[in-house]
Length: 295
Image (cartoon, rainbow, N blue to C red; front, side, top):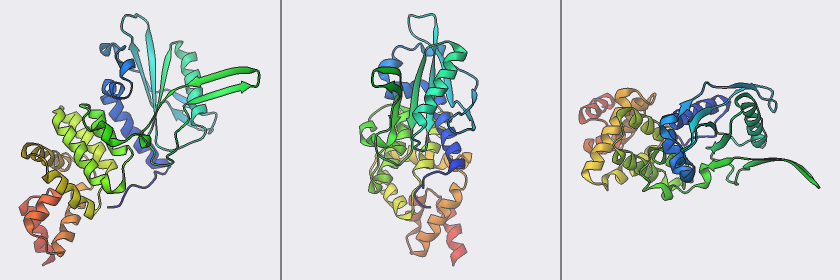
């Protein structure tokens, strides 16, 4: 297991889909986390996700799908507005222009006010992303299109530790993290997750998200287990149950094989069975079976 690399085009589609699933499942929680004042104006019973819009991208010359489009009512108003959220897993200089084109076509089709949001999830570059698109001359400003930009690599994960919000539990995994902090961040994401007491479907989604973006190598896995061991027994047991559910539900492809590989490496270093089981989340019986294979 190695640290995640920048996604290629096919991987970007998978990343964007995972973000879309998270946001659509926890829509109000997403807005409450990053745009609390705006979220407070929305009637949560009115949220309706619209069919995906397919456009020919005039910038890249390809067909593109508007990722997430929700129709909502504002409190005290009868008319609806649209909220367009576009997850972006790669840095592109033309992105503000493309988002404006989406805005213009959606506005032309629906004739509604649109609130545009970009969620930047790439690891690099670290520089602050553009949040506007302008067309202007020295004596005339023809156009100024602004959008809300949420850039995860600009956010410190520590600022979200105590947010009782499932989106915080997930997105801490993609925020600004020092390499040495990766095991601790994964432990804290799962600690927050188990304190939220979500329904099983949401819990599996968040845990899948965390495990997708915080894949740990062997040394990190040991540090991660040490972080879990410092927690109270109730939280520790809940986290271990959550980790076991990834395997039982098949939420992360190959996770059992990965944990078995870690266990085999530890066994070859003569680490005690109980320590191997605790570190990998495997049962003593599973570890004993693996031990028999290398003897």
